[in-house]
Length: 221
Image (cartoon, rainbow, N blue to C red):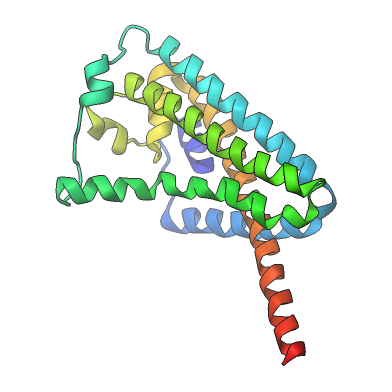
């Protein structure tokens, strides 16, 4: 996502090599580890900022894409009834594999559990966090998918084979042009980076719980 912004800025006249892509991945992982370690005292504030930015991104996308594609909107039959399997898998199996993409959203309410020891009034705050996470991802995801399906180029090969390297970048570009796509993809990258940081922070808590449990077991033994 970060590299797609650079490609858009260069009008598709630059393609990152595998080395650049992997180097960007390594830098992202190292930054996640460093920030999750160094910014623990303010991680709760960063999470609040992350939630706000994700809401801005979601509502901005839901509003901006239909406006940008107002003369090329897909009808309801396409949004709710069109099915296209571009994989080499059988249709039924491809449908099942499609669930692998959104299933990571369980990390939202899963993180609430792992940081429950640090929450104020955890007996009420954690259940509310779990419920809010499920409700927000369901409703926002539902309307985002409708918006994307309603504004996407019906020739899906153009989207999947985008020179920007990201289908979502192509969708933004088709609807909002160069600068709109750069702005939304930059915001999308920042939001995804923050969610990665959140996942790493939750994983640290999970590792600490396991370590404490193992230590207690060893002492007891």
